[in-house]
Structure formats: structure tokens, C-alpha cells
Image 1 (tube, helix red, strand yellow):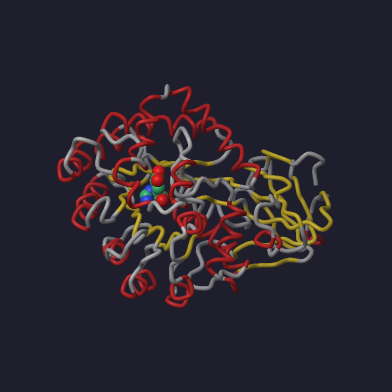
Image 2 (cartoon, rainbow, N blue to C red):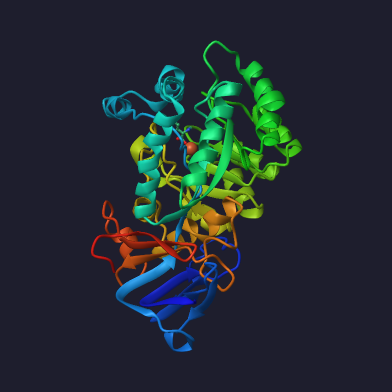
Length: 408
Ligand code: NIG
Ligand code: FE
């Protein structure tokens, strides 16, 4: 049986595909609008309500949009690090923490926890994401810091993915921090020669990531990881220019990476390379806010024609945030994105980063019926009230996966 909703507004990036640069003109706004889907959860109609062949549920004063796609998170992890945030407020830097605490501390917590304890910690976070409208997301390793522990984290990610209502893509963050007692070149060799091939052979991951930074890995390491990822047939992603400029964005673009993420200190050449190439610029404004870091040159990235995506970076160190509406809100207030630019960045473009476009991230015939019902008569209400969850209903594959008490 076909099902349909009609609402005061339906907003979506025009599919299929991504929108580069400002992207805002590529947003379709129907007022009123309607969406219908078949029993397989595939969208059959997006248009004015009068064009519907079936009866629709009418949602007065509501906006229907594609479900959010969170294309950069560090789940699964276990344990918080609120004391580190407090220490940073008192003057410690994240760079200081990157040496001994930080990532290595999360690695110790992961090691000390059983599989069930890790999953029990993560399940409520995925539920929180669902209640904030996330219908697809990335899970990442990077807290294993040994070949076996990274493979374990990837297996836990796949387990979480198999039980979550959301579509989950798993990334191997093979080079996140140098493990204690190991030198950097030895770890890069182990990551490239053992970890990446083993994870690929077991079908555990869909992409490979690396953090290029003076406290993490070098441009030469990025090249080595890129070669190993290419041999394994996996797309490359890169934490680039987060704490300082390193030339990582332009290097990632030259290597044909799927994305360069963070970009707080991206150079002019990096902006130009992202504008000209196919590597997406993944922005994480809540991470910037909580690190009290300078924002990336978002206007310049848009003007250069970059494919801009938004994500939460959900992790216990820099961004303990699970809410895409919050990422959208801070993306608008701190980065100057317009609401429609943020919509594109948080849906269609983010889906492209995860290799999920065009089935995810847009409302269009043939796409999956992953959608959210939002408060208000336009998408602008999402960034307007940070800290408030504007999502009333999350639909995944045509089924209601979460609904606020009291319903629509
Ligand atoms: O994306 N910069 C590297 N990685 C994470 C933080 C990880 C952590 O502190 O646990 C980030 O900000
Ligand atoms: Fe990250």
C-alpha cells in the first residue's frame, strides 16, 4: 500500500546528486507539498498535494525534509572526557591533551570495556541521533590503536550498524594517534601492511581515514595510507588542517580523497583545490565551537565551488554532540551558512560523502523514504533554536522509526 504525507512545506535538495558551492538555489521548496512512497519504502512522488494519487496525512504548520545524514562521527566509543573540556576552559590546549590523554585515553577506556559495555554505551547515542532526525551516519574506528583493537572496534561498529534503524557506513581511521610505545613509522607500516588489508579482507569497513597534524601523522603518511586504501579498493578520507595548517586539504584533493574534514586552518591553495576537485569539504562547527578554534573560511569554500557537507564529529574529545540540528544551527550562526545551504550540506552532500547518494539525502522518486517532519513552516526554524530538537518524527525506509510524544 502506498503511503503519503502532505505538509505546509516540503524542502529538499533537488536530486539526484550533489550541489557544489552555495547550493542554496538548488533547493526545491513546495508549499504546500507532498511525498508518497511504496511498501518497499521507495519514494514514488514529490510534488504538490493535488498531484497525489492517494490520500495523505495532512501536517499543518510542519516541514518535511530528507533525513539528516551525519557523515563524520567517531562512534563506537565508550566513556566521556568532560574533565578535559573543563581543563581546556582553564587554559590547557587540545594539542597538549593529544599527547597523553585525549585519543589514547579513549583507547584505554575502549580496551577496558567488554563488547557489551561498548554497545550499551553507544545504543542511547544512536537513539539520540534518531530523535534528532539522523537517518544515516558514519561510524569510525581510531580508538583501537593496535591492529587487533582496531579490527575489534570495526566489528563492534558493524554490530551496531546491524541493529540500528539507521543506515551506517564504517570508516577505518587507521592513523588517528600513534600508539603508546610504538614509533610513528612503525605504526604507519602496520596500518598499511596489516590493518587496512585485514579490515578490507573481512569486509569490515567502507572507507579509510587518517589524521594529518603535527601531533598525529604527516603528509607522507597520508600518501602511504592513500596507497593502501587504493589497493584495498576503499575511498580515502582525511582529518585535514584541524589544529594547524599542514597542506593536508590540497594533498587529499590531489590524491582524489572522498573528503577533507575540519579545515579550520585550510590554506588558500587548499580552498582552491577543494573548489576545483571532487574532494568534499566536511565541516564540523560544534567541534570548532567546543575547541574554541577559528572557523574555516566557509564563504571562500562556497565561492570556490566546493562540495560542502556538515557533520557532528560526535566524539568524547572535541564534539560530544549527537544532534545534526545542532550542527546545522552552529553551522549557520558560526560559519555563516544560510539555512538552505546547511540543508544541502546536512543531507544530499553528506550522503555523497558516505557513498549513499542518490538513494539517501534527497526526496525524489526512486530515493529511499528517509525523512523528517520538522516544526515550523520552513527549514529556517532548524538553525533558529539551537539546543531545541525541532524533529517531530523520523521516518526510515517508509516506516516511522521515532516520533515525539504527542505525535505530529
Ligand atoms: O575529529 N582530531 C582528531 N580526532 C577527533 C577527536 C578525537 C578525540 O579527541 O577523541 C576530532 O576532533
Ligand atoms: Fe573527527
